[in-house]
Structure formats: structure tokens, C-alpha cells
Amino acid sequence: MSERTLAIIKPDAVKKHAIGDIIARYEKTGLKPVALRMMQFSKSTAEGFYAVHKARPFFDSLCTFMVSGPVVVLVLQGDNAIKKNRELMGATDPAKAEAGTIRKAHGTNIEFNAVHGSDSPETAKFEIGYFFPEMDLVK
Ligand code: IDP
Ligand code: MG
Image (cartoon, rainbow, N blue to C red; front, side, top):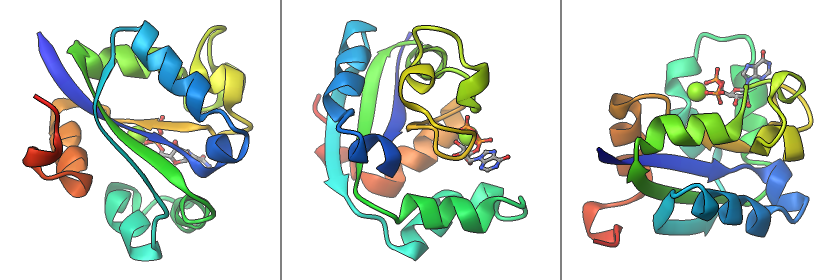
């Protein structure tokens, strides 16, 4: 079933000049970009996006990281896009990520881990709407 997921190329990966490599991996995996935006998060943008993690000990540090430089936000579409992207990303901790995954290639540690990907249809809907109005998605 074709579905959409939200991906973010995080500040660490943008600083490493990995935007092109990461987008190439999406395309090769059948995850087609249907919206794309480069931006710099404000503190409130980061806090609102990660509100689900508000009670976690790493919340403040995570938000500080996410505002530390520009990011690329994309909507990816394809069969089983949510699960496919999570597999392509690899484990949250790059040290535990499988060979061939984005986090294995570009992540530094459990916080600076190169990419975000929605983890369920509900979060994908919220996260896509957080950055893109429906009319900005390519049909
Ligand atoms: P995910 O990105 O693999 O879905 P989540 O548990 O949703 O992982 O965490 C969101 C983000 O918070 C991670 O991608 C990572 O940047 C950061 N993070 C997660 N766990 C930790 C931690 O234990 N210490 C520091 N940062 C963390
Ligand atoms: Mg998550």
C-alpha cells in the first residue's frame, strides 16, 4: 500500500555534506520525495515537533541539537514507506545500526544520528502536517 512518511536530514548530516547521499538512498529504495524543504528550526519548532518526548531526559539536548544548523525536511512516498524508511535509517544508536543503513554510514552517536523518520501512520500524519500543507505535496 502506498503511504507517506516524514523524513528529516538532521543538522549533523547537513554539516557533513551528506544531503545528496541520503536523498540518493531514499530514491534507490523506492521512497519518492513528494515535498522537500530546507530550513532552520526555531526552538519552538523543535519543541513542538518532539513534544512526544517532552518527559525524556534527552529532550532539551535533542532540541538544542535540532536548532544547531539547517535541516532538510522531506515527505517520502512509496509502498510501506514508513517501515521501509525505518529499515533504511537503521537503529536509533548508530553503533547498533546494521551495515548499509543511513545511521551506520552517517550517524555519530545515539543523539547525533543523521536522520529522522516517522514511526507510525499516526505520527506520519502529524509530522507531515507540521511542515507541509496538503497543497505542497506533489500528486
Ligand atoms: P528514533 O529517531 O529512532 O525514532 P526516538 O526514540 O524517537 O528515536 O528519539 C528521537 C531522537 O532523540 C533520536 O533520533 C535521537 O536524536 C534522540 N535520542 C533518542 N534517545 C536518546 C538518548 O538516549 N540520548 C540522547 N538522545 C537520544
Ligand atoms: Mg522516533
